[in-house]
Length: 547
Image (tube, rainbow, N blue to C red; front, side, top):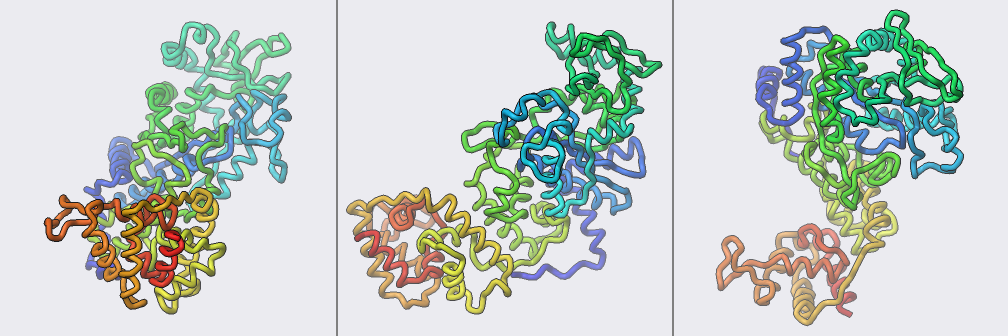
């Protein structure tokens, strides 16, 4: 890999100057926070992400932490790391369980716990965690720790019960009418009649109650309501006896903690002004926002924790690296993207392509390169001699049952290569074999060659036989073109530099190669594939498929 250019005399100055005008979205958001500090100076900036543990954490949850971390690092660069920053991952685990997720064992056993706080619902998975909320929180933290995020974890249950939110809850009781003035215009007529920003936790059943309040005593800091047993009850708003409805809760948490930046999905966008207004009613300035598009599953449906559609964090990491996942999060956050297994190979290869470009780039382009943001300004230098797509095609051609098959091809292509000399390549080989077995092999669809394709492939078989076995990718690619050019079906007169005497070659020729020989719709540059797979092996493959 090309080494990075030598540092300038004042590296920090060059970096800071490039950061001031960097167009990457994390810098755009970080500059908003810099301006915020000019309006309201403070010693510490708080970045927050929210998590609703009503289901197992999915990749979208991870994406909020990864993206917020990127903004946090950009802010630290813009301020020369002179302002203290914190990242708080806040779990709304005191929310009532409104429905039972589809992807939990023994769903019927959870039915008695509907509307109870998630940290009061038994853990359906068993193990060391006492509640469903605790289990899901632990799953999220385990991955965030594995990835190495610098964050603090916060539980709503802990914050409510320990008194950390008491001051803002008392303020909410004092400003009850003002909060209602914000909320009521956003509700339908029927909901207006029963709405309250405070949700009592029933002393009788332990459920989160959506009931109208009979009285709010700001001086005493209490609310009065009719409990499930029909009796009138009065509870303090402090100490975890009540919680706030989710819209007031958003704004109240911002006010209580002094949050400066939070991103959320597009499904929150219409409610963001409500969150802001509640925060202002409670005497604080709302944080800077960043709204991202939602992820979709393979059918174009919104990913849901309760449905368990789309990818889980563990599923992605079974078949690809955390860095490739971080790249997928960095790219186009304001565009809806499909989050399914078929996006993984492209993400893996794009990550290594960006990494290879980084050392030779100037600072302007470096700060626009995703790997700078993924690795917090310090991307590693990695020699990756082949692409993930190439490994998948090698696995497909050889029906690789284990990693040794792929290493055989790789050692011939790169003498001396091993898992010790190329540990990242070793990871990629493992991912490729697992991905091949799970998704490529079961879906391979070979088709027979028609008469034109058969003739072309027979000609390719003969032409490859004339080449020396150690021919390079470029020489092999030239043979591919030479075989196709005389065939009218594969001639492309619109290709750059094409003439009637020497037409270009259409993609249809290469599609035919992959569909007939490998059972794939497309693949990498075929000359490079043959160089690694081997000319004798490729000829044997042609003979087998034509036979």
